[in-house]
Image (cartoon, rainbow, N blue to C red; front, side, top):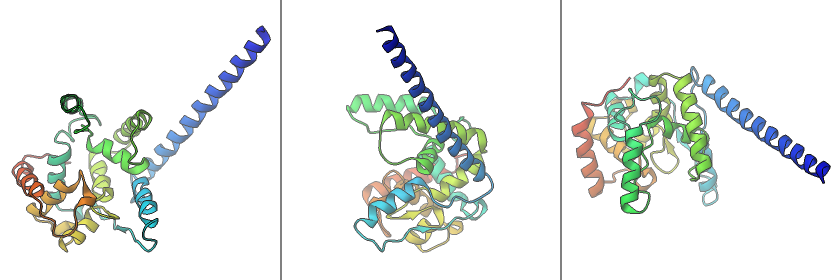
Amino acid sequence: MAASRGGVLRWLGWAVAALLIAVLAVNAWFAAHILWWRSHPVGETSFMAYRMDELHAKSPKAKLQYTWVPYEKISNNLKRALVAAEDAKFVDHEGFDWDGIQLALEKNQKKGRVVAGGSTITQQLAKNLFLTPSRSYLRKAEEAVITVMLETLLDKKRILEIYLNVIEWGELVFGAEAAARYHFGVAAADLSPEQAARLAAMVPNPRKYGPGANTAYLQRRTTTLLARMNGARVP
């Protein structure tokens, strides 16, 4: 009996060791990509691949709209609008807005369902780069680890630059350049304050809005963001 128990314990020990090695290997893979992206454009994100697979099941000829542009060729209006909309403390925190998380938990508790997430721009970027839209405690834990990596290995300017280039802004529309041309027919560098605010207002539900969309929500949210933009701090 003792020998049998010892064999089970050894097996469990090997299983735990194998699991730890696998976790370390995956996170080393994440870190290697982040280091590469310090000086190279992002080619494709996990979110892009997920959306492509999802849409190809319905429309095999669907094509991704995505063009990387450097930070300097993205309107400051859009940078300020996104920070105002998604993460007002972006330049100050180290990846997590604990006050925002607490506020989101309180809102969700009050409503009895998830109505707010409290995710920072860095957390959203972690999810877009490496994860999928699925929700689980394991995924949130991995998102947190990647968030720490991003904040450790990249500066704030690069984090915002990548975020602006890879987030979703329509059906297979990713990044500021593709979004500006898809929604307004202009380059990302030429976005006006109102256009930038409207794009930022779309971020929570980007596939809901096509070119020319002008719902009551978008009007209200655009007006709110226009009032906040000048006070938003960007790197």
